[in-house]
Amino acid sequence: MFRKFSFSVLLLLSGVSAFSQNDKPSANGRDGNQRTGRRGPRNYEVNIVNSSAAPLDSATKKELNEVFFKVYPAFAQADGYRTVRQAKLEISDNYEGSISAKAGEIIISSKWLKDNRKRLEKEMMYQFSKNWLSADTVKKKGYQLVFISKDPGLDPQLKQNLIDTYFKVYPKLVKTFNKKSTKEVLFVIDTAYGGVAEASGNRILFSAKYMKAHNTDIDVVTHETMHIVQGYGYGSGPVWLTEGIADWVRYRYGVDNIGSKWALPEFNEKQSYKNSYRITARFFEWLEQNVKPGLIAALDDQLRQHTYTEQSWAKFTGKTVDELWADYAKSPDVKLAYSGSAK
Image (cartoon, rainbow, N blue to C red; front, top):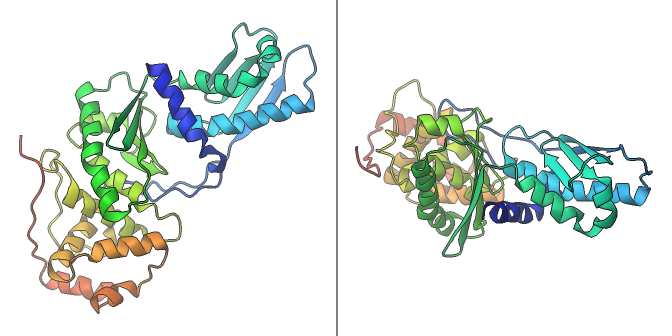
């Protein structure tokens, strides 16, 4: 079952891997002490080495190169953080299997390759898919979640809670903010990732260490899946606005913010709307309650359409964002109600 599911991950991602070198991941990151996690395009390279006795003709070398770029970027996307971008692909007379495939190193049996050229791409996908500890596919009501874990210590209940949160929250976010959002999402629990979580394309990367230490913080899923729904790309608007919207969505749509002891901070004079995350999110909730309901959804839509400017605030409210912040600072009281229950 594991191999079938993990193999399907590469089949799914290989369809988009062709532009993985040039795509534009969404803004990421999630909490006030967390770096934003923006990442540029990932460039991949392969060094083909022939260690076999027979010469390697140009047609075979071209085919190996093409198959690598169909398979490896998809594997790297699913594999998680710091998967090496440069790989060595060796043709060997001494390897007794078919293909050995791991991050940065591929060995192909010259004997196997001679009689299995047509199976090259699928076999390479299959061998790469064996790198993960587990990979499960869950489908509900038209939505799919592929869950990859590289952590042998992952709590099964935490895993189930993350899956449940996805299916409770993500369809609502798609319906409310962006009906064109993908319905196929990938979660990766990564032991090498040192942040909290980040979203890129349709993948969300979770820190195994963070989730173990904060196993009630399941609404990290709410924040990060909103980044997928946002799908702004580069140049759409400031990071503080992107992150503020994602944390405001966590406040509005989160399933257990009380259980994770997550709350929007009280206003103080040292704050700025540009602080991002929860500080900005509280300002946004104040705007929704006191200035213009639906404002944040309207700004979100402009960011996605790349029509947002600093004048958007005045267009929707009659005031600049600085004037709105000044009003907020004079009377920052806001009614807040959090999801979940104390335990």
